Image (cartoon, rainbow, N blue to C red; front, side, top):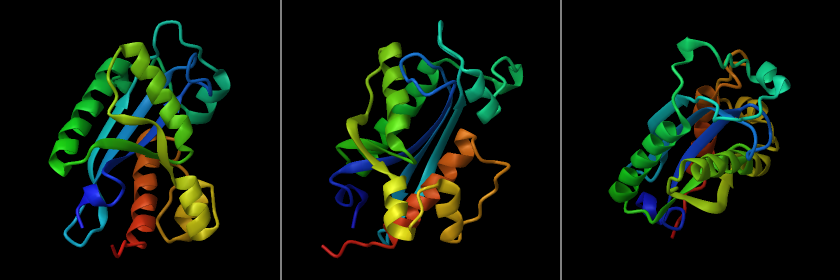
Length: 197
């Protein structure tokens, strides 16, 4: 089976964002990671390409102190090497477009843990930067629902631990680490359910 045949012609891309609040219209996108998945000759998904960016808050963005305390991001730290939303998204979108051609897929679909949250911030940033998104505008694959079905857990750390994947609480709540673990969770669940047709 080829990747294009597994999910209705969609290319799954795992996304996690760290933000300055919960409102995707007013709060800043501060960090984003995207992991593009591929499929091996046995029909198993695996993480292929990782793209990770620290992002500068857009002009006028609301910064909630509680969100910053939770994710531990120091917005003003020059070592973040933060880039604009446009640079981060345009590079991610370009890699996705290349993968769509390579895999002969029609569109990409966002995979996330509470995927509606990540998609909301990606859509808002896409609108602000006047870019064209390769993602389906409302369909997602949510690993919260998948893990609830697969192992009876909805919290990422608990689901990961329950199925035997290593989890480090000290690394959690960074977009890079959470995306890596979400991709491992997705691959574990999907690879255990091989389609026979």
